[in-house]
Image: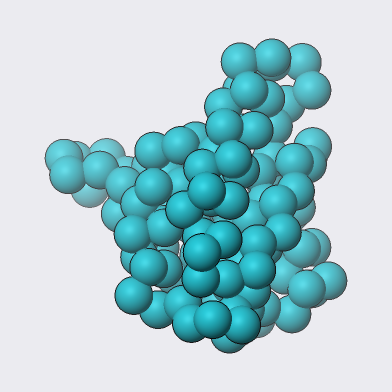
Length: 127
């Protein structure tokens, strides 16, 4: 199995790794993509930390490829999906609001609308 993961924080990565823990088998692959602004050093550091967390958590079971990218997160993830042909795309739902006026963020919404393969949205908040 090959999973494409989109994450921009350690918190999101932890929730996604929890989801993947029971699903990965030896020989599986995970491509983790983090998209950071080139002008925001804090966001870039958060994305690098997210990639490092994925490597630490998942390499015992799967082969992990990490990528730090620039651009529109949804577009970058969909492009990575076209390039790597994963079995699923896994993203976090940190754009969720407790009043349910916006059940997911714009990036997740775009991925759900445009992905041509299964997309899994992992909850990252207990609000």
